[in-house]
Amino acid sequence: MRLCFLVEEHYRHDGMPLDVVRQLTAWGHRVDVLRPGDSLMAISEAVRAGSHDAWVLKTVSGGPGLTLLEAAAAVGLTTVNDVRSIRGVRDKALAAVIARTRGLPVPVTYAAARWERLAEIPAAEYPLVVKPADGSSGRAVRLVPTPDHLAVLGPQLAGEGLLIAQPYVPNSGTDLKVYCVDGEFYATERCSPLHPGQGVRERQVPLGADIARIAAQVGEVFGLDLYGVDVLLGPDGPVVVDINDFPSFRKVPDAVAKVARAVLRLARTGTAVSAPGPALLAEPSAQVADAVRLPAPSGTALGVGGFGAAGLVGEPDLVGGAGLVGGGLGGAGLVNGGAGLVNGGVGGGI
Image 1 (cartoon, helix red, strand yellow):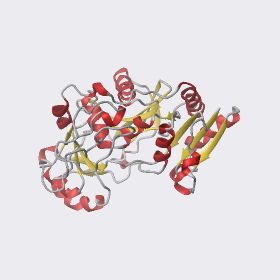
Image 2 (tube, one colour):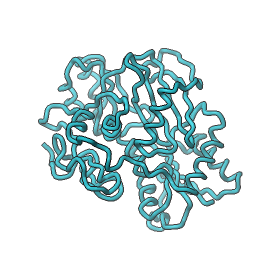
Image 3 (cartoon, helix red, strand yellow):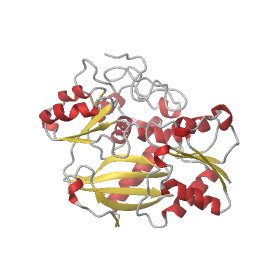
Image 4 (cartoon, helix red, strand yellow):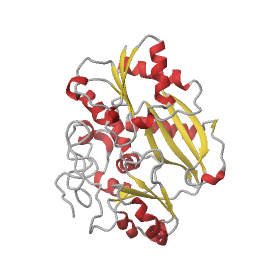
């Protein structure tokens, strides 16, 4: 088979996915590696129908590789993961909406384009965890204990774009990362980035049935094949705090061979197409409003309305483009239409 791996600069020396590339090559497959962050390429010629059996992306959020992957999908090529699914989890505000409306245990999520607007969040919601909606690898994640601390920590988030804030889930300082490889699940325990002094040793741990069910549901809801789910064991049970497409798969036994086999299978059969679809919402407006709460509708507070399933699968818009508070970031859907994902459409900013 002929495969194309898109590897951003952040991962150019990383074992995942480069070891997978070596494994596939050793098995006799042809693998082209493109580095979209450090290359000049004739993109109109590089991406063409029939050029590869599958395109695989390992990138940071916001990297140029996703554009190439979307181009490959647009001409009918298989992508790993499905490109619509990647978009669905890369935007953490969008992911929170989709996850909450589909019954996944996700914290209530606030969104704002400027950190100052987060001051409108009720004091009862503190402590807060604040991070960029397009963040990855723990970038700019802040634990904000009280409203007073927001004024101190907030300027560090300036320039990060759309921010999300979620009430902190009390936990032991240990994160549980659940990896899915070709339908098999593995759990790894590690120290929480919010509690670096805990000294938790990273190790594989048994996977409980309840958490396995949640991880499987994440794959079904977002249409992912290779992914990771960050879970906290809070006082009220497991809580999903992050979802990653094509993670590191650290501590997964024989991870390189497992991922390589999964890529080959997906190249032969096509990636999952069960990205969030027309049945996303039973009562759209009320459920979306509960999924991502917005600061008071004034100033530059950002609406999350109008994300509509149309932007995911090209079906008629379910939520409508007017938005909960207003438009703003716009967007014509993930691949083929709709009134926008996170906002936009006919609403207009407030």
